Every structure is written in structure tokens, then in C-alpha cells.
Image (cartoon, rainbow, N blue to C red; front, side, top):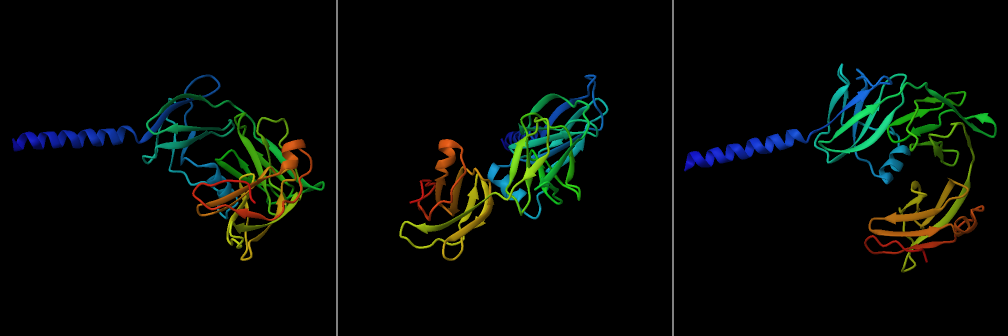
Length: 281
């Protein structure tokens, strides 16, 4: 009986280890323009990132994303990339002189064949008032971050049509556009200033609430509940204040109605309650 129990236990351990090992990698094949396996293509695996985490990372001191693992394709173009047992991951595939692919995959998935077409690097320019802007941060999708040089120039690989390019500079409003557009030149503007005050339903000021504009965390309320967003997009759509499980939202009605120039919102209040989002009152 003891031998039987030991055998059953051993089989269970082996089955568990097999299950873990079989779901700890994303596999696939990278092909070139000639539909043949492409050797040496770089495969990077990242933990899945929510939009609010992406916004916060891009505004932080360390915008570059740390991969879970990095590997290269074999001579036949196949690869197996370690996911570190993450349930869902973002996979980035690139190679010199070819376009970049970003996709999401569940752990243990074979994502099949990916074609990396030959494509020249694209050159863009960042300006403001007709002058080059140096040091602007350019996010290409969620995997690549570059900066504009002293001439305002930057280079990025060809991206998938559904990716977006975002340009960030502390003295200007954040701007973005689709990567498939013919030009990736950006003319930055200072944008609109938004002032407001965050208070509870009891009328008391709420300090240290995070103020987001169109998802981007751009300010924090002071001790008196007041806040200033210095460079919001001129046609901002939504401002949200969050503090723990308290939150509130105000829409830019002028943009919603006519897409005309936005106006500064009056003082607003934070509504308490878990996941409570209502118009500030």
C-alpha cells in the first residue's frame, strides 16, 4: 500500500512539473520577406501592462520597459521565449533593417509564423513654434522609447499600422498619432491650463489625489485640494481625480458637443465609495 501511495505521489509530482514546464514559454517562427526562417531576430517578452501603468511609466524617470526574458531565433527562424510563468505577456519581435512587431500572447501559446519585412528606419522631427525640440520622449507602441536629438530628429523602425506614436515633453502638451500616417513629424503646443479643486462630499479638501487627463497622470492635488495641469491637450476630453477607492470625473462638454476649444472646469468634488465614478459635484 505504501509503495502504491509513493508511486501515485511521484506521478502527481511529475505531472505537475510537466504542466509547469509546458506552460512557461511562448513559441513561434519568424520568417523573412522570402518566407524562409530568419535567424538572429530578437524576441523580447514583457509582463502584460495595463494602460494606466503605461501612462505612469512613460512619465517616470525610467520609461524603458524591463523584459522578463530576451532570446533570438535559431537558424530555422524558430524560437522559444521564457514567460517566467506569467499568464499573459507582450511579445516584441525585431531585427535590424526590418519592421517591428508587438503582440500579446497567453503563456504556453504557439503564435505561429511572423513575417518581418525589410523596411528602412523612419525619421521624424519634433518642433515647437518652428524650432527643433531636443530631449522629447517618443514612445512607439509600448516597447520602444527614443529621444529627439539637438535637431529635433528621431528614428524609429517601421511599426504595425495599429500602433501609435506618443511624444512627451514637460514644457508641452502630450501629442500622439497613428504609426501608419505618412509623416511622423510632430509640432508641439503648450496646450491648455486646467485649474480645479478636489473636495469630498463633505466639502473638505482632498489632498494628494492623482489628477489624470485623458488617462495621463499630470498633477496631484495640494493640501487645500487645489491642482493645476500646466500643459493639457487643448481639446482634452476627461479629467479624473483618484485617491484610494475614491474617485470622480468631469467631462469637457464643449469638446463632446462641438470639438471646439476647451474651457477650464470649476471646482469639483470627489465621490467616495469603492469604484465609484460620477460627475464631480
